[in-house]
Amino acid sequence: MRTLTVATPSHQYPIFIGENLIAQADTLLKPYLSKKAAIVTNETVAALYLPAFQTALNKLGIEHFDIVLPDGEQHKNWQTLNLIFDGLMQNRADRKTTLIALGGGVIGDIVGFAAATYQRGIPFIQVPTTLLSQVDSSVGGKTAINHPLGKNMIGAFYQPRAVLADLSTLATLPARELSAGMAEVIKYGALGDLDFLSWLENHMPELMRQEPAPLAEAVYHCCKMKADIVAQDETEQGIRAWLNLGHTFGHAIEAEMGYGV
Ligand code: GLY
Image (cartoon, rainbow, N blue to C red; front, side):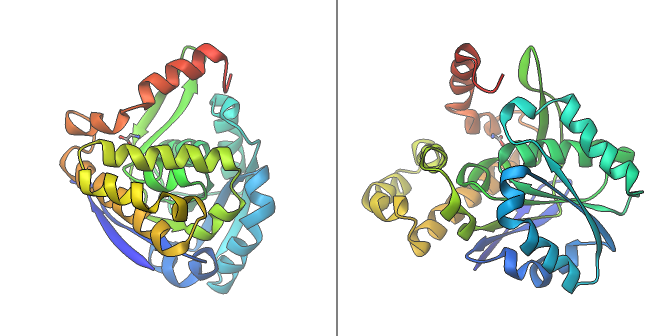
């Protein structure tokens, strides 16, 4: 396992990167959890990883409940956000309850925004289960939902307490999602790290086969680059905008094609 720290002016938190980390969530996340937690995930991820996460919380004697949302970008909206608030209210979540975002970018963004706004802010932990969310959206505290007139238009900068990037979860990722994540990895090289770009070129077959060592190296390198940028520019006043390379065009193309609507 490898660990690095994101140090923003508002918060400092660890990113844990490695294989089988959900199984070790009890020991790794213990310092960042409170007595009560809500695991928020989607139907697809719940079937795969929710039981293991529940087991980890049980080992720590933490009271917990689940909120299982529909899967898909088209659900990243007010209605789904309200399902999270419904679950928190019904289970009497208070200001110390920890929200756990177990899933890809949609779950991370919507749960982060719920954490930023429920009772004016409660702690949350990111457990990204896609390559794209491990190298990008789980790190740096951008949280949001979509508005019918624009993607990610309603949100907040709100940093998690910790990020647990379990590379084993990528084994169940559809090929298309793995490729989308790998495009994001290549973006970090294209942002000006030519050594990394050439390393990626040499290791792409192993990366696409998900060999643990090169995969861990790639995720670590991207997270390190992102952590360094976020430390300098937490709220995207300057250099952080570079990280949007490809996203802005991508969002426009997706919107035009009706994807996620
Ligand atoms: N996804 C770009 C950023 O986090 O700034």
